[in-house]
Amino acid sequence: MNSACSFNTVWFFAFVLLLLSRPTRAHAQNNPPFGAFAFAESLILPGTPGEIYDAITGDISPWWDHSFSEKLYRLFIEPKPGGGFYEIFNEKGEGVLHATVIFARRGEMLRFEGPLGLSGRAVTLVCTYAFSPKGADSTRLELAVRCSGEVEEGFSGVVRNVWRDFLFERFKTYIESGEFRKRRP
Image 1: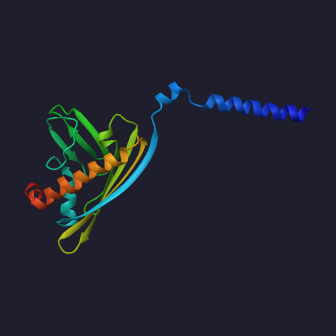
Image 2 (image 1 turned 90 degrees about the vertical axis):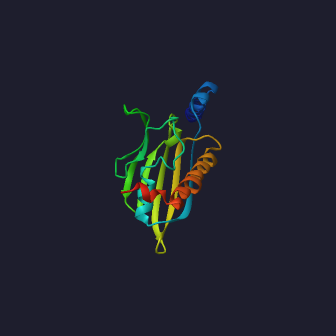
Image 3 (image 1 turned 30 degrees about the vertical axis):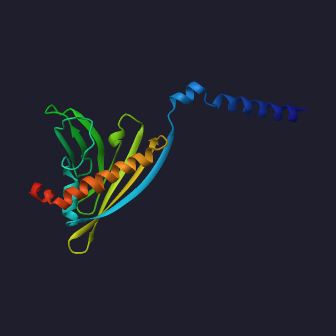
C-alpha cells in the first residue's frame, strides 16, 4: 500500500506541475514566437575582393536604402572588430547601432551581428560577407544570414527579399556603375 500511495502521489504532483507549467492565454500573448532561419546568396561583381570589400563597408549610403530616418546624416559600417553598423540621424550623433562587427579581414570576410532593421524585437541576425576572386577582375560575394529570436511566420521570406534587393538591385547596380571607384581614395 505504501508503494501504491507513493506511486499515485508522484503522478499527482507530476500532473499538477504539468498544469502549472502550461502557459495561460495571457502568458502566451506576452511571449512572442521564437524561431530561427538561415539563407545564403551569391553574386559575381566586377572588381577585386579588396575593392568590393571597401565598397560594402565605410559609407554605404549610395546603395543601402532602408533606414529609420527620412533624411540620413550618415550611414556606415566600420570594418574592424567592435566597429559598428551605424545610422546617424543628425550632427548631434543621435541614431541607431544596427549591428556590431565581430570579424573583419579586408577582401576576405566581414561578419556583423545585431537586429538590423528589426530593432525593438528580441532578435539577432548574424550576417557574413565572404569575398573570393573570380577570374582576373571579378569577385564572388557570398552572403550568409542566420537569424534567431522573436521570429514570426513569414519573416525569413521578408528578410531574404530585402537582402536580395540590397545585393542584386542596389549594390550590384552601384558596383557596375563604377561609382564606388570615384568615392574611394
